[in-house]
Image (tube, rainbow, N blue to C red; front, side, top):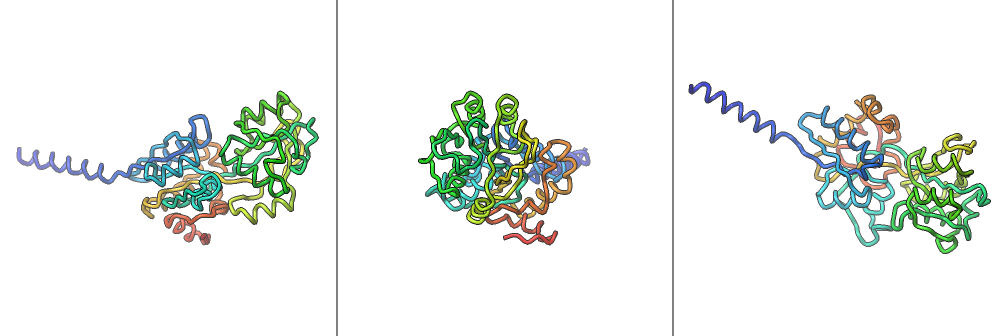
Length: 315
């Protein structure tokens, strides 16, 4: 009887130890219908299934700006954020004017979110320089898209005062081009964007390129932008490549998450990328050479350790 009691107590101790060894993390993502939420859930499952004792829960949120505030307050441990919004928060600029957040760092960028500038063919717009006096949607008020639009216009010597500015969602922007109440719009999203795909099937559109000079100016001034091409055929009737710039979907982390944990997280993403790609199309876009590019704030020490093992030098 005494022997059975000792075995039972030992069993309880093992259970208690295993529970205490479990690490619970909240991963702030985005709205339930968006890529951040679906891809975040896949990433959380990958970590939970491959890193012993880890329990990551993907949580629906209002995306980048809210996610950074959640991390800064310690209410989330990891988050999807656009790298430009991350820069604003760290430096207290633009949408974070006067509000500096510092309790976070970067792990990696995952895929580009392209600044797509669409116009109706009937508008006559072929360049951002043609936007003067035109009806242009620049995204929701205070959104990252609005700041992207502002920065691109500035490269052409324009301000919001030079256009007939509308603050509309991506779907509302697409509808506006379709029904003739808008001439052009800015949409910042992965390529292809569903709203623009649908629009191009019913309305003749053009994708407005960013000129070589402006690309150089913008990427030199704002380190979170990268140059990309939107391939011909992405949208119906758009038969040539379009030069554009992009921000990056990024994973940020609370600075209090241990180095070893962050190291294991990024290592698992690349070691198990084939599994990630099967579970979500965005998994195909992970690229170790591109992972640290476009990050203008400090990396977490766990991420730096992983990059340095591969001979990749980051800030």
